[in-house]
Image (cartoon, rainbow, N blue to C red; front, top):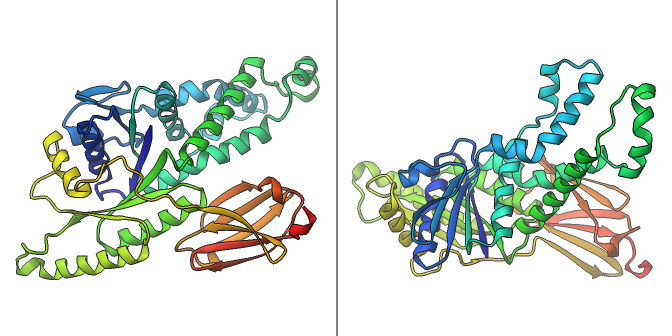
Amino acid sequence: MRIILYTGKGGVGKTSAAAATAAAAASAGKRTIVVSTDAAHSLGDSFNLELGQEPLKIKENLWAQEVSVVESADKYWGKVQKYLSTLLLSQNVKDITAEEFIVFPGLEELFSMFEILRHYEEEKYDVIVVDCAPTGETLRLLSFPEVLKWWLEKIFPLEKRLIKYVRPVAKPLLGLPLPEDDMLDSVAALVQQLESMHELLTDHEVTSVRIVVNPEKMVIKEAERSFMYLSLYGFNTDAVIVNRMLPADDLGGYFNQWGALQQKHYQYIVKQFNPIPIFPVRLFKEEVVGIEALDEMAKECFKMAAPDKIFYAGQPVKLMSLDGCYVLELKLNFAAKDMIDLSQKGNELSLQVGSYKRNIMLPRKLYGCEAKGAKLTDGVLKITFGDAGNE
């Protein structure tokens, strides 16, 4: 099975690219579903159809779905939300304020991603193509499983057996209602799903991310940041789609300068993202809407290549022994030294790059070792730990 996530700055054509990829995979005989997890759905517009929460068959081997974030959030977060609301209200927090506290930004969209895990586990499809939200929201969603899992384990660390004995006296003595067993079961199931989803999305043999850009300076800069943050969280970017390229042999005087500028930006993209494969797609004369137009876009993009192929598989995290010390390497293309903040607490490494932070559990070989220093060279962060001889 293959999972392909499409992201990019709003308006670059990522929905069209996702829909075109799905249509081409279906034409090649693969059972394919394209899923929109963007709260502002436009996938249905690409097919010129009305889509909803349940998958709709569009043609042979092709289904499409626009996930309802409200239904997904209620399904996966409902019991936890009810308990947290009760807890806050017991402390005289007003109902409206309590509601704001227990719905974190991006949380509802995160649960829509569980549809991907469900489709994967049910094995109904060979290819799952995901039309993600614009770049910033996508990065928050992809990092959220790790963050929320950490948060839930810190908030609900007690064993059910202990809570069972403490519950009768907790409210009279502490004024706090302790969670019921069904809520704790819900949290345990949620943590398990978060672990499964994170493992699935970072499995480079199954999942890859594709960034869609236009040959424009602002869009390219955001794509560079996206690529860096995707590497930070261990996701594999296997292609960059350069959409809406002006045809070099069909320009009038007005567009000559635009064409030259686009070619300059395109060469920059090829150089900067090397060795990630680059797929240029020309600007079509008409809007890319409907199956025929999407098929044409896929042919333009992938030529004779299979659209579900893994075009590149890098290794974002690597551990090696060097000069008697362990060195942990993380790929952080486009990062600068002043963007990085690194700290360690026990066997957990806290790495912040710009506005994004990741807590990394160290490999077993590094248990008990302390970080001695870090160096950023050619887009690779090298963190040196202790003495390999003290393993």
